[in-house]
Length: 73
Image (cartoon, rainbow, N blue to C red; front, side, top):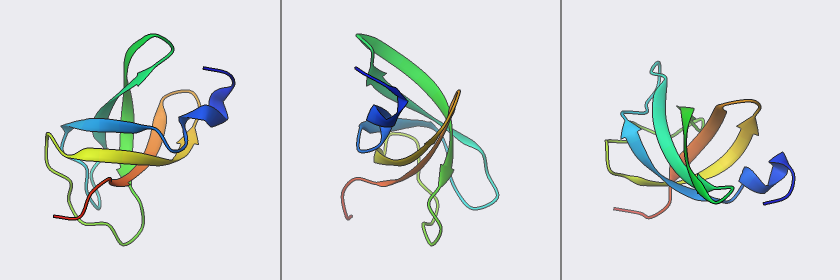
């Protein structure tokens, strides 16, 4: 991957529940491996359970992302 903006649009999987008022965790495959990031939900997004596939919509270096569900349930 190139610079940090490459994070936006990547998919990952929730490893610690993400939701309003919660700081969760996601794992994203990047830079030839898999890395964990602290995760917040995008405004208007409900709780995202462990195992949910998500899309990164904003990246705040060094280890924080804002995510939304990649697929509708």
